Image 1 (cartoon, rainbow, N blue to C red):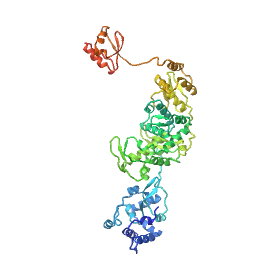
Image 2: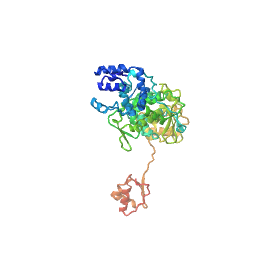
Image 3: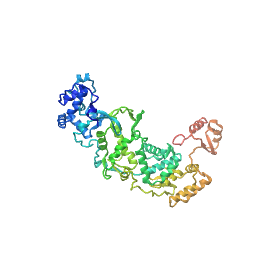
Image 4: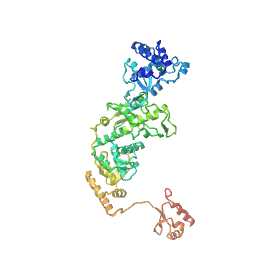
Length: 547
């Protein structure tokens, strides 16, 4: 911390004389440098100093104790937000306003006693402006430690942990399904029907950062092969560490309901470190109140995301109201939402936190460190990681059932041969179709490869009809198709020539099936109705809607 000389070296004689008056000191020196040095020499007396501290008025005493408990320093923006502003005066205005005699804040009370200084200090995570206690005065006190800075977790109430959602490593299965879908040119949305847009965005960003995707839609085949060959615990730890160490995955800009504009930047790792440091070393059996955690950060480290305490230069709007969220009054909407997102989003998805809530469908209200997370925070592969022993099964209707923890290499290949069916269960269901086999064939995959895959996966009771279907498709292609058509049925055969001679009506005909049945082209129902009306025929249309 700067000492008294550094604190006072850029002031002036009038300022030094006002400090001396507050200490009830008569200075003999009449020049600035000599007066400054005389003041410093006289106040470096512990007994004298103690008398000054004891006479501080209430709020100034609170501000002083706040700095003491923060080891003698605090961000200037946080300190003045809590204890009031410091007016900037020249000598003439200072003489008129007498701020040492009429301070407007606890900050000014301490400032005009020389008990605090103001300077830019190089403190992690960046250089910023601080309020501080000069070294000589700090040596007179016994700091209480960083108690005010420290985030103290509060155990959750019974209602806050009523409905529990345990962490899992399901993200590994979802990543595998997504890589397979992208490899086959299918949209990513098909994999995430049961998940939020935030989850999809997070996984896509994570795969790009890890190198598993060489571009947003293109898997890197070599990296994917190595990833699928890793044990589940190692693969999960790799994804977690990729996220933790990434500056390009910006959690703040993934917050739902907010729009981000402009070229301002933030450090994503700062918020992650705050949450992880609060989790590290906690008992995985104890549930903590999520709201209390957010409240503690707001009280004790509110500027964790904005080191300079700047709440005006970030351009953020509320997506629903279009309101610009400028100022510290929107802390809950931005910083508070970010803390909630980190605990209920990435840390849950990566298996680090268990969550709980009071009612189904409500926001999460409690969290705790999961057994998997306890290992990963220490950089270890979790001893509780599941073994990939899920067994692929095929039902009699030809649907492939891929349960959680099916070996990911098998899961990936199965997904390349088949089409994913919609569903919210952790068990994925796929169906082999002519289109899926055609897509696989275009990438050099054959039916024989799929049959070998079934053998490798130890599939029992493989339906002989399914084998026959795939082999016949490979030999003959599509042998049967089912499609919807629109039929026009005529009451008498002699009506058909009337339609065929009418240019407008004949243009609607796709196929004449027999003398009284005609297949109509798609989208031509209204046109054929009008044509028949012109011929004097009233048509009974039995469709749910015009096609």
